[in-house]
Length: 256
Image 1 (spheres, rainbow, N blue to C red):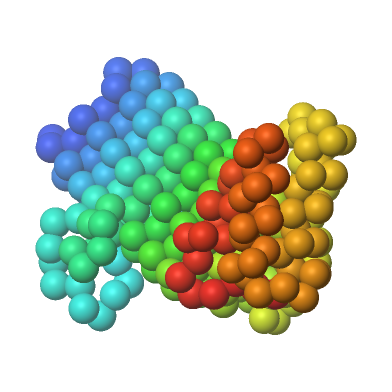
Image 2: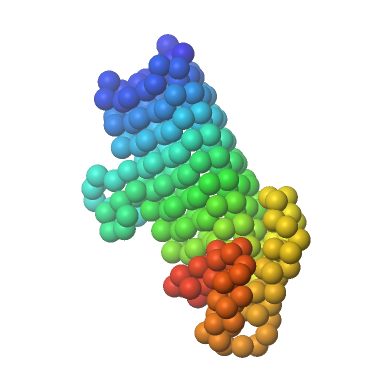
């Protein structure tokens, strides 16, 4: 299952059914779970943990030093979950000591060619990053987010669950859950209604989310006042909780 030209460190832990293609390099302190397939010319450095049933295409580079001038060789990690598709020339950096010390990528993500996940990022589950998506350091990406091709996210930004970034979006503020954005800089364009329908949200739930969105961003009210009204609605509409959480947790300010 390991090609004769691949180099696998004696300090790596590789499940017995893992496939490793020609000329790939698996470094010290790398752990790779069962069912994972690694194509040719892939480089994985440690400390890195790769879960089960991942598919890593040729020329991906995972777990190298963070691209941070302040990094001084401190022990940091990369953790990748299960069933991810990681396409050609994708790069994931390890974390930094000045933050969490770990970069985390969840489960069932589809990371397309030439995309980059920088140090200390947290990428949730079922995320799609189209070609050339670039996440700067310390970025948080919620579950089911879709990042259009060539989109970029400024460091420390948070993208709420089920959000949609149009192609070439330049995100420099936090994006609320369920929202669509586009532009340079990216601005709000409405609710990701089609994405929510595809994921099984009921029509009433989508109407409730749209109403909360209008209260927050189209009513002309101060955000604190809008939050009070949305909180009252959320008592009987739990689908509003992710939207509320993304509004409350914003530190860089919200896209408008």
